[in-house]
Length: 238
Image (cartoon, rainbow, N blue to C red; front, top):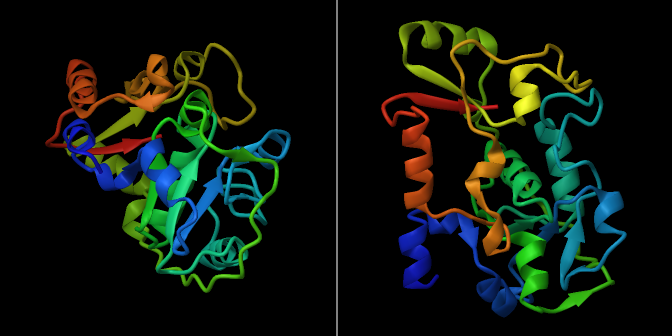
């Protein structure tokens, strides 16, 4: 990583820049995952060496369509993509990092921490004229073994006591209409938001004029502080 990247993003290991990936895309220990929905990813070109995620990028339980994939399901899917425990995984999308970040979280939840999001994703890659292809990679099966970390997810019965004590802060990153409950959404079991939650739509974390890269740490710190997100609380985004 460049010194400027390290300055802009103190946890620069969670992001890679397009220039870095262009140099390392063919490394044997790298697996690039296109995290757009399959019907979107397969209808356009993609980064050379990438594999397509065969399910919706929310990576839900494949039997119930809710929550998150089980450890067994995650192992099956990731192994089919050529992912082992020592594989460096790079996730990207064309949605400002929304879907790639979700896939990043699922891997992190299941214990695979050697995973990063491509800063700017497909938007930045295209804008910079970097190599693309219409052929998907066909890697040998991996041997990923999940080590699921249950403390990386929470539930309402866990959240409520912590909210009442003031130790936990829900951060609602959905669209304004969902937050307000003004437009019914079949994806939501209830309209509106958690009482006491702070609302910052996820789009505000992205610098859309800089090819959909994440805003710098300084900018994000200012955004969070201005909206009352305190560092002394456990923040639970939803």
